[in-house]
Length: 182
Length: 182
DNA sequence: TGCAAAGTAGAACGGTCATTCTACTTTGAG
DNA sequence: CTCAAAGTAGAATGACCGTTCTACTTTGCA
Image 1 (cartoon, rainbow over the protein chains, first blue to last red):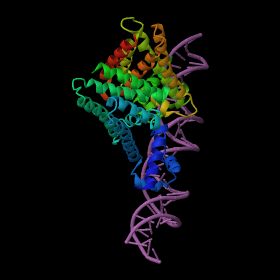
Image 2 (image 1 turned 60 degrees about the vertical axis):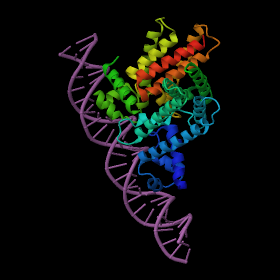
Image 3 (image 1 turned 90 degrees about the vertical axis):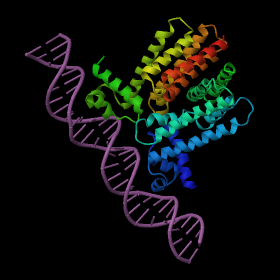
Image 4 (image 1 turned 90 degrees about the horizontal axis):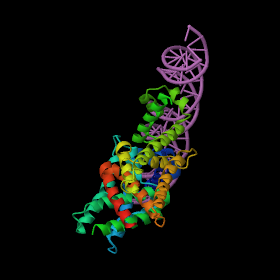
């Protein structure tokens, strides 16, 4: 894959994440990525398409955190997932959830952005539901909602108390939930 | 207080909430509030000031939900707070947290918006800490962080599964937390 | 070495933005 | 009724937006 393309994606991800999709102009992305206007437009049809690709790339990165850690099989896979989420928060998502912002910023517009962001969220929920089934907790699909809620809560709390503290609290709470439902 | 001013505030709150601060122009607010451009500017110095006032007004409304229900003294005040938060979600905040969005959209700008939004969040945390002290749970200030995390999680989950379901899960989880720490 | 593909700078376009201005009308209290 | 305060419509301003265009240069492979 093109180096320029990757540089644009990395720069856009950083700027969108720090100032919001609508708060960043292509001019700034072009300047900070050190590319020409037409280079960006040769790789991405429009700003909306660029936003879509940024989201898809970020989602890939997110799952690489979870996939890597959860299959280790040490403690409960739920705890591993919460911890992996925390690691993602600390390293790449220290201020809020880009997907949530995309859902809200592009609500009721005629592009695919909202849909892509929403799919990320439902995929997470489905993931926990499958994990619950595999652990024989078919009766308590509630645990999947609880884990998702904890991750969302940790992400928001990161804005307030930092990633480490937010993650620590979410792990503590996850342990309690698992104990109750076993 | 001026009727026009209130109408502008109500319209701005609704539009900002639905499409984001940067996604709504003053022209649209002026049109939907049915006022003249200069009427808006006579009441609010700038768009940023309008955003600030919208946030302050929304905060007032938020606390009226919590203050009303928590002092009733029925079940645990923590549960009452989580339930009141859920009622707020259902009626006025069915898609994400406006304060969180303000913190992110106006990060590192030279206005007061980020500060106002951040204060709302810390006030919530402080509120739970005081509640914990009053209940003699001085040792476990952790409960305050846990409750705040649950509220934040419920708010984000509302986007995904709706306010009722999100609130139900957060109450269930709050009950477990309180049982553990008593 | 040749040549197509990729990248370049920067101007130009039409649109929207927040904000200001002007000149006019309505409102409501004394 | 008087008159100041409040509200009105809409044009003007300058800045910035996403997008397109043009003409040029670099790159890397056959």
